[in-house]
Length: 479
Image 1 (cartoon, helix red, strand yellow):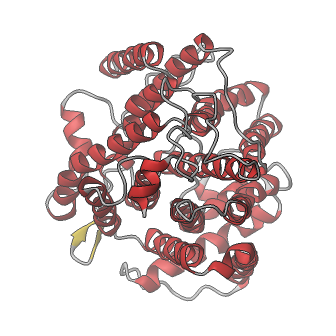
Image 2 (cartoon, helix red, strand yellow):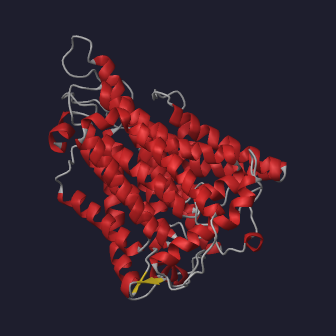
Image 3 (cartoon, one colour):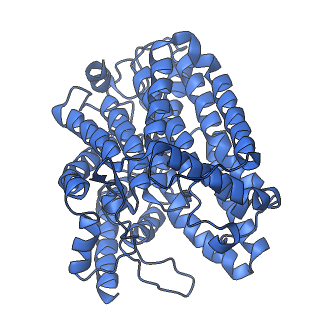
């Protein structure tokens, strides 16, 4: 573990140097995003004394916190929304649940985890998105990370499962992951740096959307060769995960994107469909909980996979019903529910943290849909914003749907954080569209420059004008 401590310390110092010299947003792009992409399985060093586990991601957040302290007083701006409120309320409920079901010290530990693995990453992404330099840095970091991951994906898919994790173990780093090999269709299910194939598959949906959204809102543009390579890598990774949940999530993402992008009349009423899906999934859950369980074939088929999901709901439903507002606590003994895992985030949320917490997660896709629809309706001087908003909303809803088939996205899980960062970017893009719509009533040419730089030392988001919320060059290349 000493190797892990040295590694995290070096990572922290690099992140702090970049945060001080270049800005918090740039450090977030160059240090936090790669930590999510590559270092989830590296054990964090236990610092104790109220400090978070000293992993690369947490070390970066500690460094960014110091960087933010140095920038107190800098002009920052977002238009607060209900999505932002939920991002704040969810940790509050988590902490309250921890105190209620365990002890005060548990609540403090949860506070630290929520700070590092939920609140700070979201709001840094939220504020920094206004900087075009920040957006370009995140875009290129994601593409480079994917290109580096793809050879490992192919190796794990066909040759050696968990090749990435075992390679880091040989370097002396302590790793935490399940090394059981899982196969489908004669291939190994790939997890690379994400800990599990389902996590990797869900992450690929968010990463593809992030690349497209960032490319469409910068001078890079959607026709750039490397942007297309990055998106292609995401689809390759999605296939290599060989998991039905991410496949279903991608299908939902594509449907929502198509509706928002091409079916104009669907934009103001899409929230009705979201509510319909929420109600339908709740009814499905009730059915699975009360229907008799047929015998499982135990052959890894699609039928077997569906029956496993039914068994999860069936065995957990009594605890879900008795969970109340604040749940039973973070730890549920698998022997009590006769399961090896609970691959249903919403069931696990309700069971462990209560119905109120689960309801907040269910509300996120609905509120994102409402705000994206509002931004699309309000800003009418250009259509360039429709594509990135449709991409962002589609992936957010798709991954939210996929959470029904995956272990809960507790704070700090890379696939959850990439989804949360995508939400932050989409919300800030909505801010820019709404601000542009407000400014367009004035008899002025183009957009007024927004006089603030987010958390990065880069030019403002509207610099360059051009009739779109993120600048003329991006508008021209995104068409």
